[in-house]
Structure formats: C-alpha cells, structure tokens
Image 1 (cartoon, rainbow, N blue to C red):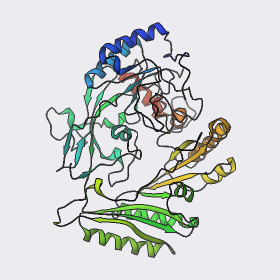
Image 2 (cartoon, helix red, strand yellow):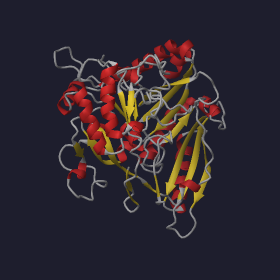
Image 3 (cartoon, rainbow, N blue to C red):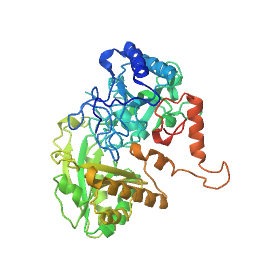
Image 4 (cartoon, one colour):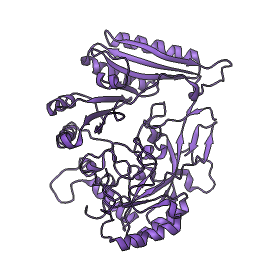
Length: 492
C-alpha cells in the first residue's frame, strides 16, 4: 500500500526542511508521541494489523492518496492551535475520525502528501440521557453502530452512513454539533448557539438557517462534538427472514416492505442479500430464493405479536409463494418495564461477506447508489465478475451496495472500467452514489450539475455555491481539499 521509507512523501510545494519545520511546531502543540512524520505508524490498528495511514484497499495506484504524516490532538483547543499553525505554513490537512472508512479511502487523502488530522483520541462520551434517549458523542438504550463495529459514530454519521436499528439513518438522528472552522473559530449549531441551553441535544432546528448540513461529507470545518439520538431498549425483539421464489418478485417485495416501513410496522430497514453473499457469510442459502432480513422492536410482547401477525398477512396477500419466519426472538422478563440488554442477547453470529481474511490479494470495490433495479449484474457478468450484493430497503428509497472482489494487479483496470459503467448507468437513471472512494469524488460531484444549460453561469449551480462557501469560510483552503469534489484551488 505504501512507498518505501526512503521515498519520502511530502505535501505539495514543501521540501523536507519546510515540512520538518511545520511538524516541529505541531510537536510543540500535541507532543512528539502524537505526531507522525511519515505514513507508516501511529494509526489505529487495521483489519490486517496494519498501523499505517493511507488507503488499505486502493482502487488505483496504491500511493496516489498517501499522506505525509499525521497529528493526533485530544482537545478542541489543540485543534484550534493546529489549524492556526497549518494556515500559517499552508500545510494541507485531511481530517479523519478513526480512519476506518474502509472501501472509500480509509485514512488516505484526496491530495497526496496531506497531513492526516486524526481525531481518534477524542473518543469521550460527554453526556447521555436515558430519559430523552440521546447521547453527546449501562443505560437502557441501544446505540446504532456502523456496519464496521469499530468505526466511528461521529465519522459514520457525517458520511451519511447507516446502521441497523430503528435509528439507523444516523444523519437523521444527529442533533447539534460543535465545529472548528479553518480560521480556528469554534461554532455550535442549533440550540448550542444559545448559551447554557439544555435543548442542544433535543431540538435540532435552533433558529434561522440550518448549518449542520454544511458539515456533512464536507471540508468546511472540523466537527469536534456531535449529539446523536438513540433507541430506547425494547422489551421485545425479533429477527425475521423473508424469501421469495423468484427474483422477478423483487419489485413487489420491495413495495410491500417499504409500505410496512412507512407505517412503522417494520422499524429498521430491510437488508437484502444475494446467494453469493450469503454463501460467503456462511448463512443458509438456496439459489432459488431471494432472502431479506429485518427486525422487529416493541415495548411489549403483545405489540410485537400484533406487528408480526400484520406482516404475515400483508406478505401472504401481496407476494405469492413467499415465506416469512422468525429466526430469533427475545422478550424481557416481567415486570413490563424491563428492557432487553443488547449485550446479553444470544443472537446468531453474522459474518462478513467479503473474504478479506485468509484469502490473499483480494480487494473490494464499493458502489453505493440510491436505487435498486436491473443492469448492474449484467454489466458485471460482461466484465467477468461476480457481485456480492446487499440492498437496503427504506420506506422511500433503496441503497444498493454492489461489491466486486478482484485482484488489483491482474484485474484492476477491468474493474475500474466496470465501475465507470455503473456510474454512467446510474446517472442515466437519475441516481448516483451517496458516498464514494477518494478516486471518484470529483466524478460523482460532477453528476450533481443542475441546471445543465450551455449559457455561462447556468451550469452546476450547486458546485458554484459550494466553492463560494469554501472560499468565504476559509479562503486559505487547507482543510480537506477535494473532499466530495469541493476545491478552492485547481486539483494538483
């Protein structure tokens, strides 16, 4: 993944002397143990035991996104000092929360040679309210974790990632944030701007224009605190599996389940997987069936029973030949106010679908687009690949996750051509990725170019606004250049 140590990576326009000078300054701020002057050490341990910074699953040249070093602050004040010093020296910074955004660039940066601002030491839960079911960054509450359990709650939320509980749309559960701007200023959004307000983690709106969205998938600031709403622990919980005899019934199954989700009968999103994925995950598989998994949560066994009966009736009426069953159930003991402890549930183990352990030289290419439908499988077959698919059905949209396992040296160019075809097909159908790898941030950003007229100033209004915002909030432009395709200077 990384270069030999004697081929030192430096930030753009820096020589070794200038880089060491600015890193000496950073050392006085956070201490030598929290500064890395190369990419080879200091990161949290990765899936293969690696502690280096960079993209451990690159889609192109393994060194395209290699950082020059890293800084690991512990407090907001230290971040302010780091940003001020970086501005003085024009040192490009790239922020990561834990650096485990695997498949999208991990702890690499769009601009090679950027210094990683690694916030993994800022891992303190500041406040939890059991009564109001929120946390600011042993309660009778269930958190919604990223698919990678070791990932960052804050980082996953800001990337619009999702989990698998009723509060799995993490961006929708976010309430209030604190942000360090590139100028070193600290701002609080929503009710956090009202001094001493206890409503900061309760009411997201605040007053006036909403600012929170500016810092999602963004390089406009560094989020240092974030409120997140949690799920009150249920008294009854069940895992369910739905299968249909034919893929031709996918559309009716999606419609039925989405309707049940809109009615809040099914409270979390439904996960669909194809036989390839289930076989690799060591789950029961029938190639003639299309399985979907979802869960039920209830404040009492009686409520869960009623919802389960309604689900069975709806599926029997709308999907001929479908089977739906409970694969696991747990009910709290009396009295009725008891709640289930998630850590003590004997839920059957779920294993990863990508054979990254024990299979040499395999990697995965992610495409996450907000639709289902046909076309992707055929393109993959034409390119000579199998798809390991997950589809996540929400009440009003579907997130399709198509993973291709390939050997980078032998098949890298072929898989990149397939990925480009997928992106083009998605755009033709009016959809795109909701997050993407570092290599494709400019490409995906470019798909959001309404209006698309030929007159000067009539194209890509959103892109123009984002560039202006970046320039106004931080004209120095050292934070996260190229993140989500947002630049204040031409790409190096």
